[in-house]
Amino acid sequence: MFAIISDIHGNLEALTAVLAEIHSRKIDNILCLGDIVGYGPNPSECLDLVAKHAKAALMGNHDFAVLFEPFNFNQGAEQACFWTRRQFEEDTDPKRRAERWKFIGNLPVRIRTNDFIATHASPRRPINEYIFPDDIYTNPGKFHSIFEKFDKVCFCGHTHVPGVFLEGPDFYSPDELDYRFELTDEKAIVNVGSVGQPRDRDPRASFVIVDENVLHFVRLEYDVGTTVRKVHAIDDLDNFLGDRLLDGR
Image (tube, rainbow, N blue to C red; front, side, top):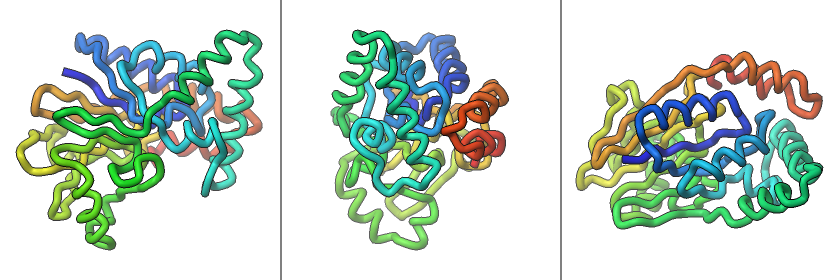
């Protein structure tokens, strides 16, 4: 049994609530699919917690942007990226500063096992490609190419919208699945949703627990008000980055 988290985005309150829930279920194997930082007010603390608790972690597009440069980001996301970078650069502890940069720099873009592939975005373009539910109607050919890139199951995040894609192409949200999905011989792309910035109109943190061949989508309330107030208190973070958390958008 293991847990998969993604898209924490510097949201310490959401991450600590999720980690506490995972540990309360006696699960000590955690995989993080990236975007540990970006948008949120506590990038350093979140990075430290992922480094401590996750058995493996991947590179997300915001992690990549902080390490190198933001590409195709909107103004608010770009500004948050530069602010996040300063938090790492201005740490007065040189050892801790070096360890954080080393951790980000060593994040892989994909993990392959005998049972699954894991990426931040997609198996075709692991850092930046979005797989949206609407794509099953607007771009079905995209799914043919994506499903060719893996054999069984692909776990991803990036869109902050949890659910399961099948080869049809079809998409099923967690509530349509009763928050449970059984893996079969049919290929599946599983988006685990976002811990720190859900965008499916549900403000609760989202993650997935894998129990042999059964996936459980978990939603968890956290102290979102504290995170919003932190964002509002930081001039370099757009207030919208906090306000959106209240509505899950």
